[in-house]
Length: 223
Image 1: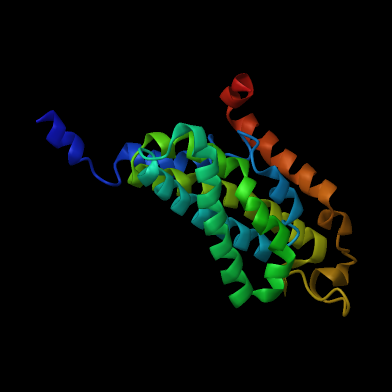
Image 2: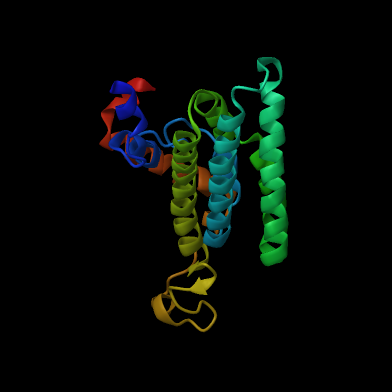
């Protein structure tokens, strides 16, 4: 009877849903575990680039976790890292070719960073910490959850950097025309070019981390 209950556990049980939700908040891989921050600092000057990178990592980590989980019992321990790298490299190639086919201009901007997904600490960490010890469905949820937490931070940082740095979101003027001095620019407002530089990405990310930890004191005690 106990075995039947285990087998009939709902796909979206509370425990499984936690795998999706927790990385978005108090188990966020970027703000709590401080992983994957290189791309968070490098490609968040534009919200579109942040979104594409986030979706790319969701695909790679979600699919990669499933593949590693399915292979976990046949991968020799001595070569498990090599096997993981082969899996993630194949998925990254798929992402790279897809971007070149559909968004070639953006693919050029992200080319280096898409390649670096292969060595992203979040991906290799979830392979090791979760996919090697759990079934495909839970591994999929864990992968999508952690990658979504990563993407969320990229989008937040990208939102503030593009809006305050160029007055745009996804390339569309939001605050008015800076040349014609319309909208908010008519009041004398000027874009903060510093927001488009890497140091401001670090400061913005630091403010997000500080805000999150101020709301959850346990994160300060744990770290």
